[in-house]
Picture (cartoon, rainbow, N blue to C red):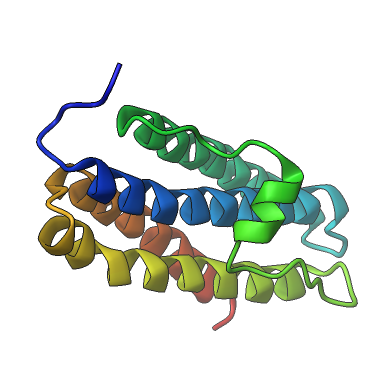
Length: 157
C-alpha cells in the first residue's frame, strides 16, 4: 500500500534517500564507538569503557529511530555493511593508539559531521520537500548529537 501522508512520492523518496545516508553515518559511528569501548587502554580505562558504552547504547537507539522513520515514509532502510559503507559520509580511519583522547577526538569529528549534515537538511526537508515531521525529527536528533559532542569536547580541555 502506498504511503499517503500529504507528501509527494518524489519528495518521500528524496527524504528517504537522505535518511539512508544518515542511518549509514549512525551505524559507522556506532561501530567506531563500540571499538573505542572494546579497545580503550590507559589509566582511565574503566571510566572511559563505561563512557563509551553509554554512547553506543544511545547510538543504537538513534539508528533504530532513523530506520523506523525511513519505514514510516514508505521506504526500506539499508541493512547491510556494504550499503552502510557506500552511503556514509564518515571514514573508518582509526588512530594509531588506543588511548581515550585519540578515540574521543575521532568520535567528536564524526558527531560534528553528523550535526552539520542534519543542520543542512532541517530546512530542506520542511521547505523543499514539505516534510515538517522529518525536519522536526532530525532537529531533535541533532540536539542529541550536540550534547554528546559537548561531552566529548569537554574531555579535550
